[in-house]
Amino acid sequence: MNVREVMTDEVISCKKTDSVAQVAKIMKEHNIGILPVLDQGRAIGMVSDRDVVIRGVAEHKEEQIDQVMTHQVISVKPDTSSQEAAALMAEHQVRRLPVIEGEKVIGMVSLGDLSVSTQSNDQAGDALTDISQP
Image 1 (cartoon, rainbow, N blue to C red):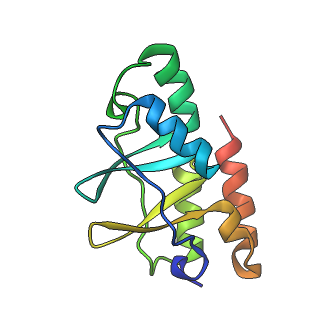
Image 2 (tube, rainbow, N blue to C red):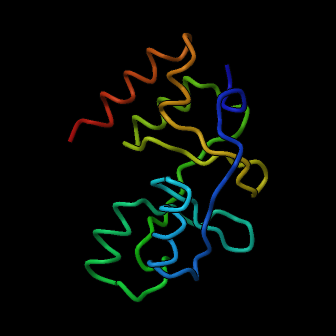
């Protein structure tokens, strides 16, 4: 099974010029905790609800989101196997990855997405164990 088969294909994102407050509103409106940060349609970072609170509100309340986002984008391609995606999540201790085709974000895949498949359920469980380790 590959990532394309289990990913969420509706991608909610923000722009690097959005403010911390704007990003918080997007997250609240869509009930999501992580967004890819785009510049001219290309993923240049990721921002989580934790980034918004810890780095944004506490330190840079009035700043643009590019001041608080994670600049390294760990991503997968749509044809990446679910096992490879789970291993990548475990290695980088993340629970969600953007799915990128060419330079465009076409979806998001989460541990939850991977766990719905019987084939990848064990890999998702192993990844969650590794992510939860300090």
